[in-house]
Image: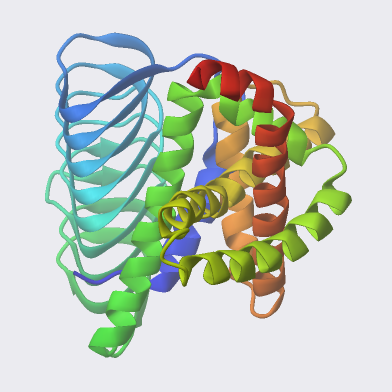
Length: 334
Protein backbone atom coordinates (compact mmCIF):
# COMPACT_ATOMS: atom_id res chain seq x y z
CA UNK A 1 0.00 0.00 0.00
CA UNK A 2 1.39 3.39 -0.96
CA UNK A 3 0.34 6.93 -0.12
CA UNK A 4 1.75 9.98 -1.80
CA UNK A 5 2.64 12.72 0.69
CA UNK A 6 1.22 15.37 -1.58
CA UNK A 7 -2.10 13.57 -1.49
CA UNK A 8 -2.29 13.91 2.28
CA UNK A 9 -1.74 17.64 2.08
CA UNK A 10 -4.22 17.90 -0.75
CA UNK A 11 -6.80 16.10 1.30
CA UNK A 12 -6.30 18.42 4.26
CA UNK A 13 -6.61 21.54 2.10
CA UNK A 14 -9.78 20.29 0.50
CA UNK A 15 -11.36 19.28 3.78
CA UNK A 16 -10.84 22.82 4.99
CA UNK A 17 -12.32 24.36 1.84
CA UNK A 18 -15.29 22.05 1.78
CA UNK A 19 -16.27 22.13 5.45
CA UNK A 20 -20.01 22.94 5.58
CA UNK A 21 -20.29 26.21 7.47
CA UNK A 22 -24.01 26.02 8.09
CA UNK A 23 -24.20 22.53 9.55
CA UNK A 24 -25.06 22.44 13.23
CA UNK A 25 -26.45 18.93 13.70
CA UNK A 26 -24.81 15.55 13.37
CA UNK A 27 -25.95 11.95 13.65
CA UNK A 28 -23.14 9.65 14.76
CA UNK A 29 -22.60 5.93 14.36
CA UNK A 30 -19.68 3.95 15.74
CA UNK A 31 -18.76 0.34 16.38
CA UNK A 32 -16.90 -2.55 14.81
CA UNK A 33 -19.63 -2.92 12.17
CA UNK A 34 -21.75 0.09 11.26
CA UNK A 35 -24.70 -0.19 8.89
CA UNK A 36 -27.04 2.68 8.04
CA UNK A 37 -30.15 0.91 6.80
CA UNK A 38 -32.76 3.64 7.32
CA UNK A 39 -32.81 7.06 5.60
CA UNK A 40 -31.19 9.82 7.64
CA UNK A 41 -32.27 13.36 6.83
CA UNK A 42 -29.24 14.83 8.50
CA UNK A 43 -25.44 14.86 8.36
CA UNK A 44 -23.86 11.54 9.33
CA UNK A 45 -20.53 10.80 10.99
CA UNK A 46 -19.72 7.08 11.00
CA UNK A 47 -16.62 5.30 12.29
CA UNK A 48 -15.92 1.61 12.60
CA UNK A 49 -14.10 -1.38 11.25
CA UNK A 50 -16.75 -1.74 8.56
CA UNK A 51 -19.07 1.09 7.50
CA UNK A 52 -21.95 0.38 5.10
CA UNK A 53 -24.28 3.13 3.93
CA UNK A 54 -27.36 1.31 2.61
CA UNK A 55 -29.90 4.15 2.88
CA UNK A 56 -29.96 7.79 1.72
CA UNK A 57 -28.26 10.40 3.94
CA UNK A 58 -27.81 14.17 3.65
CA UNK A 59 -24.02 14.14 3.89
CA UNK A 60 -21.38 11.77 5.20
CA UNK A 61 -18.08 11.79 7.07
CA UNK A 62 -16.84 8.20 7.37
CA UNK A 63 -13.70 6.70 8.90
CA UNK A 64 -13.11 2.96 8.93
CA UNK A 65 -11.31 -0.08 7.63
CA UNK A 66 -13.84 -0.76 4.87
CA UNK A 67 -16.32 1.89 3.74
CA UNK A 68 -19.04 1.09 1.22
CA UNK A 69 -21.61 3.60 -0.03
CA UNK A 70 -24.53 1.78 -1.62
CA UNK A 71 -27.14 4.54 -1.32
CA UNK A 72 -27.36 8.11 -2.65
CA UNK A 73 -25.91 11.01 -0.66
CA UNK A 74 -27.58 14.40 -1.05
CA UNK A 75 -24.50 16.42 -0.12
CA UNK A 76 -20.77 15.92 0.27
CA UNK A 77 -18.83 12.82 1.31
CA UNK A 78 -15.53 12.81 3.21
CA UNK A 79 -14.09 9.33 3.74
CA UNK A 80 -10.83 7.89 5.06
CA UNK A 81 -10.17 4.17 5.33
CA UNK A 82 -8.43 1.08 4.05
CA UNK A 83 -10.93 0.33 1.27
CA UNK A 84 -13.49 2.85 0.04
CA UNK A 85 -16.15 1.89 -2.52
CA UNK A 86 -18.76 4.25 -3.94
CA UNK A 87 -21.57 2.35 -5.66
CA UNK A 88 -24.19 5.11 -5.80
CA UNK A 89 -24.57 8.78 -6.60
CA UNK A 90 -23.17 11.68 -4.57
CA UNK A 91 -24.81 15.00 -5.34
CA UNK A 92 -22.01 17.08 -3.87
CA UNK A 93 -18.27 16.53 -3.62
CA UNK A 94 -16.31 13.38 -2.87
CA UNK A 95 -13.15 13.60 -0.77
CA UNK A 96 -11.54 10.23 -0.10
CA UNK A 97 -8.20 8.91 1.17
CA UNK A 98 -7.41 5.25 1.60
CA UNK A 99 -5.52 2.21 0.47
CA UNK A 100 -7.96 1.25 -2.29
CA UNK A 101 -10.59 3.59 -3.71
CA UNK A 102 -13.22 2.53 -6.23
CA UNK A 103 -15.80 4.96 -7.63
CA UNK A 104 -18.72 3.47 -9.57
CA UNK A 105 -21.34 6.22 -9.12
CA UNK A 106 -21.94 9.76 -10.29
CA UNK A 107 -20.31 12.63 -8.40
CA UNK A 108 -22.26 15.86 -8.73
CA UNK A 109 -19.39 18.33 -8.49
CA UNK A 110 -15.71 17.68 -7.71
CA UNK A 111 -13.74 14.63 -6.59
CA UNK A 112 -10.41 14.59 -4.78
CA UNK A 113 -8.98 11.13 -4.22
CA UNK A 114 -5.72 10.00 -2.60
CA UNK A 115 -4.78 6.36 -2.18
CA UNK A 116 -2.58 3.44 -3.06
CA UNK A 117 -4.91 2.28 -5.85
CA UNK A 118 -7.58 4.62 -7.22
CA UNK A 119 -10.10 3.57 -9.87
CA UNK A 120 -12.85 5.49 -11.63
CA UNK A 121 -15.07 2.70 -12.92
CA UNK A 122 -17.03 2.64 -16.21
CA UNK A 123 -20.14 3.82 -14.36
CA UNK A 124 -18.41 6.81 -12.75
CA UNK A 125 -19.12 10.38 -13.86
CA UNK A 126 -17.52 13.43 -12.27
CA UNK A 127 -19.69 16.51 -12.80
CA UNK A 128 -16.80 18.98 -12.63
CA UNK A 129 -13.11 18.40 -11.86
CA UNK A 130 -11.23 15.44 -10.42
CA UNK A 131 -7.86 15.49 -8.71
CA UNK A 132 -6.34 12.05 -8.10
CA UNK A 133 -3.13 11.15 -6.30
CA UNK A 134 -1.99 7.57 -5.85
CA UNK A 135 0.32 4.73 -6.68
CA UNK A 136 -1.78 3.12 -9.40
CA UNK A 137 -4.59 5.17 -10.95
CA UNK A 138 -7.15 3.98 -13.52
CA UNK A 139 -9.80 6.04 -15.26
CA UNK A 140 -12.55 4.18 -17.09
CA UNK A 141 -15.24 6.79 -16.40
CA UNK A 142 -16.12 10.30 -17.48
CA UNK A 143 -14.74 13.53 -16.05
CA UNK A 144 -16.61 16.54 -17.36
CA UNK A 145 -13.96 19.08 -16.40
CA UNK A 146 -10.26 18.74 -15.63
CA UNK A 147 -8.72 15.43 -14.59
CA UNK A 148 -5.42 15.94 -12.77
CA UNK A 149 -3.46 12.78 -11.98
CA UNK A 150 -0.27 12.36 -9.97
CA UNK A 151 0.74 8.71 -9.79
CA UNK A 152 3.35 6.06 -10.46
CA UNK A 153 1.19 4.45 -13.16
CA UNK A 154 -1.91 5.64 -15.00
CA UNK A 155 -4.31 3.65 -17.19
CA UNK A 156 -6.79 5.83 -19.04
CA UNK A 157 -9.63 4.25 -21.01
CA UNK A 158 -12.21 6.89 -20.09
CA UNK A 159 -12.73 10.50 -21.08
CA UNK A 160 -11.97 13.90 -19.58
CA UNK A 161 -12.53 17.50 -20.64
CA UNK A 162 -8.86 18.20 -20.01
CA UNK A 163 -6.21 15.77 -18.81
CA UNK A 164 -3.06 16.51 -16.80
CA UNK A 165 -0.81 13.62 -15.82
CA UNK A 166 2.33 13.64 -13.68
CA UNK A 167 4.05 10.27 -13.34
CA UNK A 168 6.69 9.70 -10.68
CA UNK A 169 9.32 7.08 -10.08
CA UNK A 170 8.54 4.43 -7.44
CA UNK A 171 9.97 5.48 -4.10
CA UNK A 172 12.04 3.27 -1.85
CA UNK A 173 10.27 1.11 0.70
CA UNK A 174 11.35 3.17 3.72
CA UNK A 175 10.05 6.39 2.17
CA UNK A 176 6.74 4.74 1.34
CA UNK A 177 6.24 3.38 4.85
CA UNK A 178 7.30 6.71 6.35
CA UNK A 179 4.69 8.59 4.30
CA UNK A 180 2.08 5.98 5.14
CA UNK A 181 2.93 6.19 8.83
CA UNK A 182 2.59 9.97 8.90
CA UNK A 183 -0.70 9.81 7.05
CA UNK A 184 -2.17 7.14 9.35
CA UNK A 185 -0.94 9.04 12.42
CA UNK A 186 -2.74 12.18 11.22
CA UNK A 187 -5.92 10.22 10.57
CA UNK A 188 -5.67 8.53 13.97
CA UNK A 189 -5.22 11.83 15.79
CA UNK A 190 -8.14 13.29 13.85
CA UNK A 191 -10.37 10.39 14.93
CA UNK A 192 -9.15 10.64 18.54
CA UNK A 193 -10.05 14.33 18.68
CA UNK A 194 -13.58 13.72 17.39
CA UNK A 195 -14.03 10.83 19.82
CA UNK A 196 -12.89 12.92 22.81
CA UNK A 197 -15.26 15.72 21.85
CA UNK A 198 -18.04 13.15 21.58
CA UNK A 199 -17.47 11.09 24.75
CA UNK A 200 -15.93 13.67 27.11
CA UNK A 201 -16.98 17.10 25.83
CA UNK A 202 -16.96 18.92 29.18
CA UNK A 203 -13.44 17.80 30.10
CA UNK A 204 -12.03 18.39 26.63
CA UNK A 205 -13.61 21.83 26.39
CA UNK A 206 -12.31 22.73 29.85
CA UNK A 207 -8.73 22.06 28.73
CA UNK A 208 -9.34 23.93 25.47
CA UNK A 209 -10.63 26.94 27.41
CA UNK A 210 -7.44 27.02 29.45
CA UNK A 211 -5.39 26.88 26.23
CA UNK A 212 -7.06 30.12 25.13
CA UNK A 213 -6.28 31.86 28.42
CA UNK A 214 -2.83 33.47 28.50
CA UNK A 215 -1.50 31.31 25.64
CA UNK A 216 1.93 32.96 25.62
CA UNK A 217 2.50 32.35 29.33
CA UNK A 218 1.29 28.75 29.08
CA UNK A 219 3.44 28.08 26.00
CA UNK A 220 6.60 29.24 27.79
CA UNK A 221 5.66 27.40 30.98
CA UNK A 222 4.78 24.28 29.02
CA UNK A 223 8.06 24.28 27.09
CA UNK A 224 10.26 24.45 30.19
CA UNK A 225 7.84 22.27 32.15
CA UNK A 226 8.16 19.45 29.61
CA UNK A 227 11.95 19.59 29.80
CA UNK A 228 11.99 19.58 33.61
CA UNK A 229 9.33 16.88 33.84
CA UNK A 230 11.26 14.67 31.41
CA UNK A 231 14.45 14.95 33.46
CA UNK A 232 12.63 14.32 36.74
CA UNK A 233 10.83 11.30 35.31
CA UNK A 234 14.12 9.84 34.08
CA UNK A 235 15.65 10.25 37.55
CA UNK A 236 12.63 8.68 39.24
CA UNK A 237 12.55 5.80 36.77
CA UNK A 238 16.07 4.63 37.61
CA UNK A 239 15.08 4.04 41.25
CA UNK A 240 13.47 0.70 42.00
CA UNK A 241 11.47 2.02 44.94
CA UNK A 242 9.81 4.81 42.96
CA UNK A 243 9.41 2.86 39.71
CA UNK A 244 5.65 2.19 40.19
CA UNK A 245 5.09 5.90 40.78
CA UNK A 246 7.25 6.70 37.76
CA UNK A 247 5.11 4.49 35.53
CA UNK A 248 1.95 6.34 36.56
CA UNK A 249 3.61 9.71 36.07
CA UNK A 250 4.95 8.66 32.66
CA UNK A 251 1.42 7.71 31.61
CA UNK A 252 0.05 11.10 32.70
CA UNK A 253 2.94 12.87 30.98
CA UNK A 254 2.42 10.99 27.71
CA UNK A 255 -1.33 11.58 27.88
CA UNK A 256 -0.75 15.31 28.14
CA UNK A 257 1.61 15.23 25.15
CA UNK A 258 -0.82 13.11 23.14
CA UNK A 259 -3.84 15.37 23.43
CA UNK A 260 -1.88 18.63 23.42
CA UNK A 261 -2.18 19.30 19.68
CA UNK A 262 -5.83 18.19 19.69
CA UNK A 263 -6.71 20.77 22.32
CA UNK A 264 -4.79 23.45 20.47
CA UNK A 265 -6.56 22.44 17.23
CA UNK A 266 -9.93 23.15 18.81
CA UNK A 267 -8.73 26.43 20.33
CA UNK A 268 -7.20 27.51 17.02
CA UNK A 269 -10.32 26.58 15.08
CA UNK A 270 -12.49 28.52 17.52
CA UNK A 271 -10.21 31.54 17.13
CA UNK A 272 -10.46 31.37 13.34
CA UNK A 273 -14.24 31.08 13.58
CA UNK A 274 -14.31 34.13 15.82
CA UNK A 275 -12.57 36.25 13.21
CA UNK A 276 -14.94 34.95 10.55
CA UNK A 277 -17.97 35.46 12.83
CA UNK A 278 -18.89 31.84 12.20
CA UNK A 279 -21.17 29.98 14.61
CA UNK A 280 -20.80 26.20 14.70
CA UNK A 281 -20.53 23.26 17.14
CA UNK A 282 -17.12 22.43 18.68
CA UNK A 283 -16.47 19.45 16.40
CA UNK A 284 -16.46 21.75 13.36
CA UNK A 285 -14.07 24.18 15.08
CA UNK A 286 -11.81 21.20 15.77
CA UNK A 287 -11.83 20.07 12.13
CA UNK A 288 -10.87 23.53 10.90
CA UNK A 289 -8.12 23.97 13.49
CA UNK A 290 -6.77 20.45 12.97
CA UNK A 291 -6.55 20.90 9.20
CA UNK A 292 -4.87 24.30 9.35
CA UNK A 293 -2.37 23.21 12.00
CA UNK A 294 -1.45 20.04 10.10
CA UNK A 295 -0.79 22.11 7.01
CA UNK A 296 1.38 24.51 8.99
CA UNK A 297 3.23 21.62 10.67
CA UNK A 298 4.43 20.47 7.23
CA UNK A 299 6.21 23.72 6.41
CA UNK A 300 9.99 23.13 6.59
CA UNK A 301 11.65 24.51 9.75
CA UNK A 302 8.66 26.69 10.66
CA UNK A 303 6.56 23.56 11.05
CA UNK A 304 8.90 22.18 13.72
CA UNK A 305 8.68 25.44 15.66
CA UNK A 306 4.88 25.36 15.45
CA UNK A 307 4.78 21.76 16.67
CA UNK A 308 6.87 22.73 19.72
CA UNK A 309 4.56 25.67 20.42
CA UNK A 310 1.39 23.59 20.06
CA UNK A 311 2.69 20.75 22.24
CA UNK A 312 3.95 23.17 24.91
CA UNK A 313 0.68 25.12 25.01
CA UNK A 314 -1.57 22.07 24.98
CA UNK A 315 0.42 20.19 27.60
CA UNK A 316 0.48 23.20 29.94
CA UNK A 317 -3.29 23.66 29.50
CA UNK A 318 -3.88 19.97 30.23
CA UNK A 319 -1.96 19.88 33.52
CA UNK A 320 -3.14 23.34 34.57
CA UNK A 321 -6.74 22.18 34.17
CA UNK A 322 -6.00 19.13 36.31
CA UNK A 323 -4.49 21.40 38.95
CA UNK A 324 -7.50 23.75 38.95
CA UNK A 325 -9.89 20.84 39.37
CA UNK A 326 -7.73 18.84 41.77
CA UNK A 327 -10.33 18.94 44.54
CA UNK A 328 -13.05 17.57 42.26
CA UNK A 329 -10.67 14.87 41.01
CA UNK A 330 -9.76 13.84 44.55
CA UNK A 331 -13.44 13.84 45.47
CA UNK A 332 -14.34 11.65 42.51
CA UNK A 333 -11.54 9.28 43.40
CA UNK A 334 -12.78 9.08 46.98
